[in-house]
Amino acid sequence: MTGIAETGGAAALRVLITRGAPAGWRWISSILHGKSVVVLGPPAAGKTTFVRFLERGVFLPESPHERTRRLTDSRRFQVDIGRGQNFTLHISRVTDIPGQDADPAEYVANLRPQGMVLVLDWSSIETQTEGVDWLDDFLLRLDQLFLAAPRKARFRTVMVLLNKVDKIQFDTGDSKTLVKARVDAGMRTARGTDLQHVTVRDCCLVDNPRGLILAETVVADLAIRLTEN
Image (tube, rainbow, N blue to C red; front, side, top):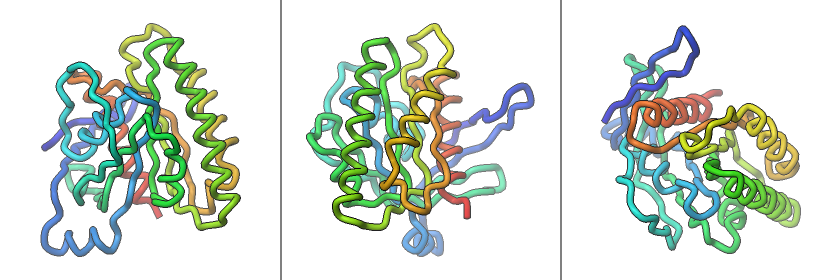
């Protein structure tokens, strides 16, 4: 499956993104160099939709929300970025952590992933407030876990998605600054020594041109950051 992501402004860079199951030497490379990613956030924020898009490049059809009730791992897959496959991200697994889970931070601390994607519903003032409260509680608990039982954090990148921005009419610049500052402040111990990037991005996981561009830009950014040395 393919998609096009715009990652620039006026002189937008178009990036071809392909996905698939690794075969041959790529299967071996995925075992040796595969990255693990966790996706989590409040209930109904869009986590499972993002996991499906990251893995398969398709959006879930719009329907009444059905909760993910248990921790779910993806298959092993790869994401190629660029027409000449400039970057290849080998994914060993993507773990979708249910939003209603009582202690998602414990899962993250035990899994020690290289990538963490936090999905927040940014469609209204109410969901934004709930999302920030959830984020603060999660980061506090995560830091406590790493502080109480010292273990090596392996985060290379942390990405926060302000999802459903198609439902709001205002710029999210101030929101991104606020959320990034909270993540930076909240991950004092949990950030470890390998964390290179904390980014906050707009997202709307809907099957239209804007949704596709925003979602593919997120995938391209995640792949590039996880494959950087």
